[in-house]
Length: 218
Image 1 (cartoon, rainbow, N blue to C red):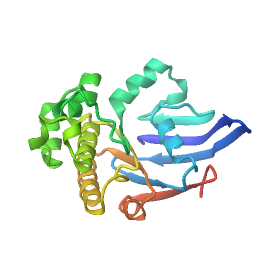
Image 2 (image 1 turned 135 degrees about the vertical axis):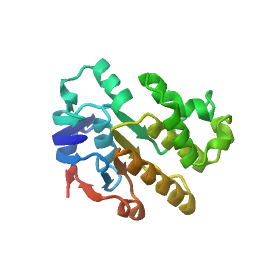
Image 3 (image 1 turned 180 degrees about the vertical axis):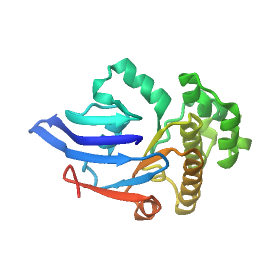
């Protein structure tokens, strides 16, 4: 089991008081399995993704990544786990503008101290980025930037990949191409993938779909 979420609750405070966002959410994800997390805006999808990524802490409940309970880890240990076990793909790409494509792709691997250049070369080739390695993010199209973001995530050889609307900014054909490449690479590496999406077409390509409604899985 790569990811196990058990009875997680999370609330935020606003001007009107405490607002529950997650209400006892539980789910699990095995190696090589893909999962679509769906729900309306404000349903808690991104919050759950950030908790699974060790970027936010749950108010209660437990989250295990590769058998390690995130609730028992301090900030330093959580950061180390993110570097070695977890990769994220954001809707806004989050590429580093001062680094070229090759440097962006290798960035997380370099942070974890585990750069496998042969693996990176395979990922770059599969995503059609070989001719783009010397370019900087500003010179790339949206689809190319998303490919770089996915390449960076997979190059780090994570156990768990978490993607927040990974094709939300792309046209239909580019989104289909990027999704196909992402799923192929995930299948080849045995990575567990959870995707937050509003897209029924993207969700249908995953092994499973779950719906988050009013802070609970429906």
